[in-house]
Image (tube, rainbow, N blue to C red; front, top):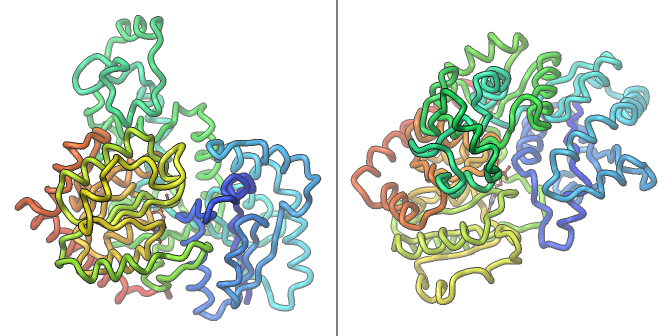
Amino acid sequence: RRVMVDDLDIRERARVLKDKVDVSLAKGHINPMLQLANILYSKGFSITILHTNFNSFYTSNYPHFTFRHVLDNDPKDANLSKLASKGIGDLLSGIMLLNQCSAAGFHQELNQMLIASKEPIVCLITDALWYFTQSVADGLNLPRLVLRTSSLFCVLVYASIPVLDDQGYFNQLRLSGRGTRFEHESVDLDLRNFISPIEESNSKKVENIESVRNLEERVSELPVLKAKDVLKMRIKGQGDPTAKLLANMLKQTKASSGIIWNSFKELEESELQKIHQDFPIPSFLIGPFHKYFPATLSSLQEPDRSSITWLDRQAPNSVLYISFGSAAQLEEQEFLEVAHGLATSNQPFLWVMRPGLVKGSEWLEMLPNGFLDEVGERGHIVKWAPQHEVLAHQATGAFWTHNGWNSTLESICEGVPMICSPFWGDQPLDARYVSDVLKVGVYLEDGWARDEIASAIRRVLVDEEREDIRERARCLKEKVNVSQTTLGPD
Ligand code: UDP
């Protein structure tokens, strides 16, 4: 019995980052894939991982898997040189390009493996984003399972993009900020990052649109969401390249033999019913993966152990842990607001400052003058933390997160309340779910203002309200434990 797991990576991301300490992007996709591979290995399957050459250095941490480099072995390949000319911000084009140009090469690789393998190859598992693999698997009569590394809720929202578009939710001209007519100045700081200023001529058009929506309005199709959450996904409608990528992903997921989710039934019970209706293929909710294989070593960046020795010296439930994952980047102004908010909150904090977290900065050089002296022993900064251990530590009282799905799940599993500051994609959806459905987080939905940051920190760590949030988080953690004992990864 042989299972193949495919997790391609993008040449460009690695090239741009190779001078930095760590090539750590896309952890939210790579980690769950490796965790799933470990789960399957523990059930007796042998595993072959098909991977591009880039980001492949961590393979030595997995001596029990076979690794095969695919697709970017030929430096003269014209498609790959196109990829290399794209910037890191153009991740999406890289993913689309690989989807467009990889089918023939991948077919050849797989075919060779099928012929040469001594064991029967039973299945191909790929990240949902590699939708081109469905036709390859079909051509070789190989079942393909899809790993989806987000929440079910997020996929339901993605599936609703055409409807949301028809109703005008992606049309910035039909949205107004905080009850006022939508104008550049009235848009929240974080929204301003991805909405282009409205031109004079467009402003006139706003006057002519009859129903201008309010950013705070609930979305009729998906009442969990506010209109501004849809905008924060950074999609400009069905014709947008991201929307097309997602549409292809969903179409080829429906054509697969089943979906593996890093989620659990007790968390997304009503979403699961809807998924069964919309995706009439088997759904396997076997998460949270990290509960079975916590230590995923997918990069050279060593988690800084001083995080734990520092936490050991802090009072129970007193520390704010801050991490915005492996890819998000802050503008300098946002970063300064974070620093000032932390300074005025007067609460202990452990802050993961990845090199490159702040645009235009290597590491700590943009911290306000005197910040480190002012916070002293009250704050501890590391480049990378052992996040699972940090969240499980008794001193950790709250997690200020970007709501990547892995970080969100990890926080839920340890019963740690969140402060939510999403950046893009599924993160604003998860943030809304955490704050309004699960009610285990405070959503900083109006951007990065120091006073609001300090107030959110006090709400989760100091104010009376914290007890209710903590209690709900504790109940949710209980559900994870129940889910694990009743299901397990079998
Ligand atoms: N992570 C970590 N140490 C850190 C920061 C993050 O181990 O200092 C891990 C975290 O536990 C999670 C992953 O990196 O598993 C980030 O994935 P997520 O989906 O939250 O965000 P992404 O990086 O994909 O934006």
